[in-house]
Image 1 (cartoon, rainbow, N blue to C red):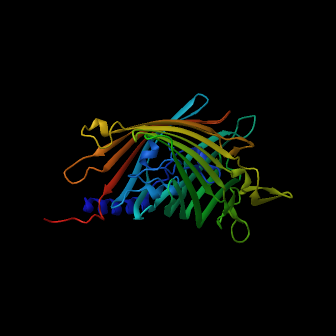
Image 2 (spheres, rainbow, N blue to C red):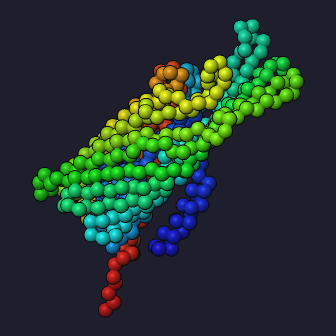
Length: 432
């Protein structure tokens, strides 16, 4: 099993280096891209709920205070993949796209009594799109234009987290992350008539910065079998020291003269991380049935973002406010396991489901971007063999719909697969 574990580690490293963006959405061309799920396999079966959950055999990076509940004598390692099919609809036009991506790799262990640690890699945003728009230049329909849009990249974070339970029932925790990544976005313009000049724009940005996530959980014992946990999280917003730039290329077809202008004239513009707040409740009955409710707020409206526009009649690439909206998300999820340590296989399976609703953080041409509704079902399947009966295969299927008035509607069907290794690495074996 240990050889398999190290093999997976090597595979994760290789996959991370060559991972795709994880999206085909045209909406990822705006802002920092499509916001990624930062939950692991067991959360995703419940549509990502988890701020109030405390799991002894799973890593829950949604709230670092949960690390204090990790089992002693074990090392937990969780790796996840996803595959999806998305249908894009605009008016009577429909297009399908497929995508697969490495999602995350996290690990957790107990360092001391009521003191746990976790580390790993998580996605933050994804950029990935490619499409073409065309039309007539004038009412006479004698000439046409073609705009080609392409984008790729995204941002990830490597984190190290600690969770501590100083008082029975009360836990605190923090994740310290290194946030990094880049994106490239382009708009290439062409005309059918040879006399027309073309204009192309290339946008780039690179981030190398930090991110902090604070968490707290308090568990109240309602009865001998029932517990209720309140979880809170806080991520302070700050400038990320990014290097956002824009390059504009004007090509005069008649004279074959190309004029390239870089914005800003020196250095690059900064990008900002929004302040994020989360609250969650988790109810547990007899360690069999769990119900969770999460609310998260991302204050994107208080951040600035660069935009190519005109300032005093001259083109410029400058920071603007009011390009984003605050994002609100509500998620409800449940997990049922008849008998976690029972003799029958089906009784040890976890049955999960969840739904959520999220408001957009994007503004597109001054209007609200796509709102999001989603639903998932999933299973936590125990892996039972002669040397290990603590590991779990987490499988979930989800549907996500993004839509905005007058814009593209996206329907995505996604499969998530997470494999949780749970081994007794620190036990002292006795030979008789």
